[in-house]
Length: 38
Image (cartoon, rainbow, N blue to C red):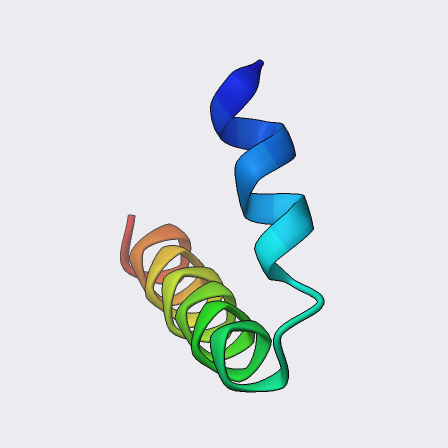
C-alpha cells in the first residue's frame, strides 16, 4: 500500500509522470502483442 501512495504522490512531478505513462504504454503494447501471438 505504501508503494502505491508513493507512486501516486510522485505522479504530480511532470517528468516522473511522463516516464511512468510511457512505461504503462510499453507494457500494455507488449501484452497486447503477446495475446495476439498466443
